[in-house]
Length: 572
Image (cartoon, rainbow, N blue to C red; front, side, top):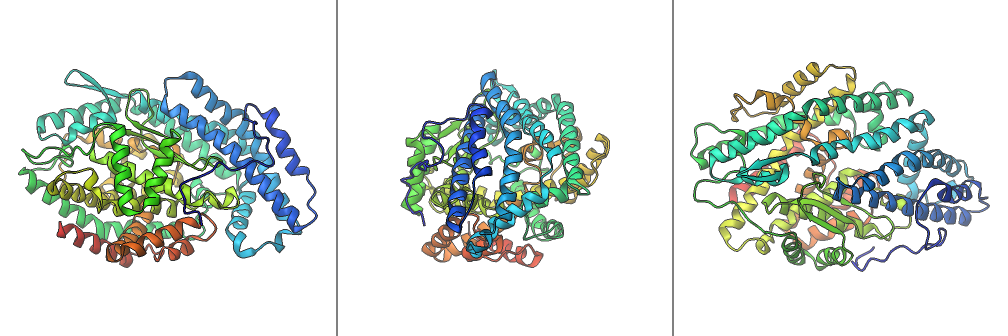
């Protein structure tokens, strides 16, 4: 188990030390070597796997850096071209080799001599990749890689003017915390009006993405892209019916809690009707939480917070900082959102976000910090493939870190009153995100089951699903036009289809770990580290078991967890 933050770049034995990915001509010989190499023993096979893993790490890290650089500066055409070159000229040529290597592995007589327990999830994944591979999908997937990034380019260019200054939409979000209700409404409307400018362009982009994705599914012998994507995402351990169960549980056991939160907010603000620009606000006289001002301060306070949980966690952030693996502050021309990008060869990942001095930025930082620790803990696993863990455990790493860290937010807040408000904000967010997750997930099921829908049908279905998961407390009169395209702000729909319910599933796991942490801090941390250190070498239920959790999406289990969160909120 890797319990040190002193991460070392993986030594190269197969690819020369000084080799960098520039074009396919210089890269292909390594793949040819692996394809043509004779394997005469189990030892040969294990060495072949290690060489393949090393090559994968080199290529993956190169691709990651291209994406990181492009998202840090969407205005730099040469960075965009470098990323697109990889997607169009290198990625498509890798796929036939990846398929050939998968088939070589499965056909090898020594594969059955490998430790089946150790290689079970890897072999399962290789079989799945062979089943899905279709040559005619390669050019479509290359096109999609480039097209999906258009969402970031379109969104990254969106700015509005507030009080004579230009702000990105992320930065403008801070005004929604103001106690000047007129200002909040004005900024809310400006943000949405700005989104409306590009709504047709985003509709068009999404329609094209849906059609291309549907074609990929049909080519691979599937009825629709949803069924294809479930297999591609490696959802071996739950089904679409489990997703429907989850949607139902959210309606039954979580929407009523959201209603309670909204009613409380209305009382606190002393208003007759709750409007969408009120949800982040505080009563008159209560200053918005300002946990930090600069990116540097956000980093330093996060380190102090992580130190309180476990010194290893703080050391991981320090190591990343030493390597220059942070880009934290929002600025014009930077892509929206936040991510932790694992770097397969270096080991220490890169955290990208758009901090603007708000409470939500603290949550993003500790969330991505959780992902980063996962990368550190799995760096020394033998093969790159062992580090490909299911998203449903990857998001437990980040969401549990949000909840663990909450007990140590003193580094961000001077007064108990502010600390209490921050915790309340966090727990409200834990609860209120569920209906949105269910809405986005249910919407995607419909979108891909009905790929030839019109924009009007899409809009009607979006509104219908949105209403299903609404409390009725929020007054949206006069805002119907904005509501029709509410889905367009969700990056995942464009860039990583179907990757969203994982947040809901993982939030349940994170709440389970937090219950352990509150009862016994050391046990909670130990179970967290144990589960994450396994990477993707175990099945999802086994990973949850290693964390002392039950993998369960039933309404009754969800009800138990929600009652616990509700009790914790009432204590505040």
